[in-house]
Length: 423
Ligand SMILES: Cc1cc2nc3c(=O)[nH]c(=O)nc-3n(C[C@H](O)[C@H](O)[C@H](O)COP(=O)(O)OP(=O)(O)OC[C@H]3O[C@@H](n4cnc5c(N)ncnc54)[C@H](O)[C@@H]3O)c2cc1C
Image 1: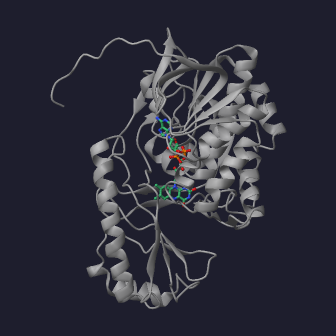
Image 2: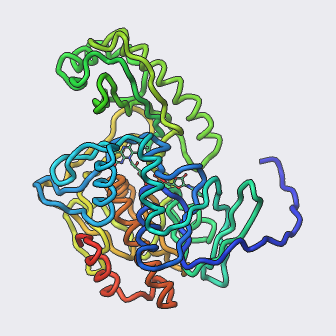
């Protein structure tokens, strides 16, 4: 920073009043907006980019995890399950949620289908719009300030749901937040003209990788290549840029370095991996992917022990079963602790509630969890499930004219169960 300037005091026009405004249209935001609208709330979904999906689409993250407890028992139904089925029926996903470790989706088609899925629930969209401030009366959030090509405007709402993944609205509203070391950023990419398809994980390829690892030009530890349904195409999640996504300088460097790493990786594959000699870049992720940044320090903080012991809570609003998957902040490797097959844990409503700020709910990657617990619940299916819970809670609170922290938990759970959610 080099000093400050004094901006003029200004009058901000009120664009509209709604029951529920959802900030951010990733898996959590989609879940929250659709759930709120289906409960009868007048709902507006505000998204910084020109399309929906968050990491599903802008990050090019293909594998939606995790619907089961690893022992064949479904732990997620409700909206994430319905969304996955919708993608499958429309040719944008493959995999069986009840059986496979993940459902693999096609980000290009998902960009279209996510918008249709959301619109048919009655949600209205505001795209190319950044939420830049919270509107507050005392300790209660009662709307957001947005900026777009139309200028700076206010949207007033009975309840605001923060699904920005970085807790933007929470921070703007002064909620208590946490951020420690963060996992590396990754630019995903897809390849075409791979002859080894669909055997991307064959022993031959791994042996070749191990043999030539000394000259592998990336700080990654593994050959995270996944065959795609399209013949000869492969999805790669192998780049690693160390940095903090809440700092624009780091994001800028990561976008530049991420693309350089992709090109170096392709050179390596073409030279050393059998079947990759003709491989070519098909597409970059639209933007660098973030795994971790700010998290809410809410009314309850989910812990590693809760996750590993499969803890239940009386105010459960979603379940999850993915292991603790943390990529090292500096250097290769990381930890992956799988949950015992048959284990799943509950996410309590209190993880969605800031401590001293009312009128605000949080879902997705920025909800209240320790670093280790976040390593598990950050996956997209879980984020969407927490979004659904926040959306229903927001709609009920708006209808009953109470703040979300005063909502009757049993009634919230009844609504979720009626929507097919497993608690
Ligand atoms: C490289 C990588 C690989 C991954 N692999 C997997 C995997 O295999 N399986 C899996 O299930 N998960 C995976 N994840 C994790 C998962 O993708 C994310 O944790 C998940 O998408 C988080 O969902 P979300 O809705 O909370 O946030 P996001 O998906 O990040 O969506 C947030 C949305 O909010 C918008 N937004 C942000 N700030 C604002 C603002 N101020 N105003 C308006 N809009 C805003 C963004 O544009 C975005 O659309 C991976 C993540 C990365 C980065």
